[in-house]
Length: 151
Image (cartoon, rainbow, N blue to C red; front, side):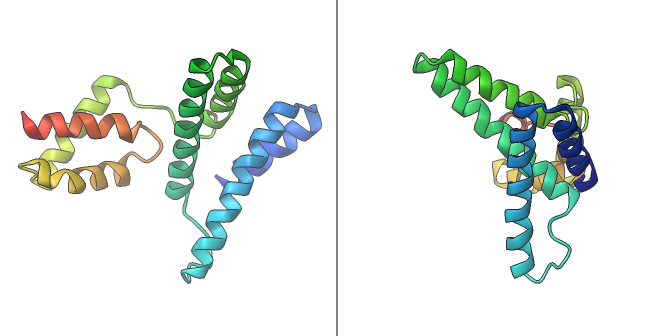
């Protein structure tokens, strides 16, 4: 992951693609912040690729929220800039699972963890995050897990 991010930065520099370069710099800065925090926890290698994927998903979620706020505030040009950043960040994520695959993954996770009620939701979500990091929207998946456990 780190190599892909570094290569993308070099490519953006060479092509003088300012929007891509600024977004990749934001990714790189967030990665450095997380690495520094991880080092203080005696993890000398920094964060793992799964943690990088989680960080990227968080960045996408933040930009979706910002785009909605800008849209509601009558600033479509700023909302469009946020959406452009989302597209750039998504290039570092693996292919996203289809709705059917997410549903199937949730059913398998419920079965494998032996979840029987909403109290077991944390186990199911932890299982999904360990198996499908970067491949699904976990905030949407959590609603689906809750529904599966309730009904």
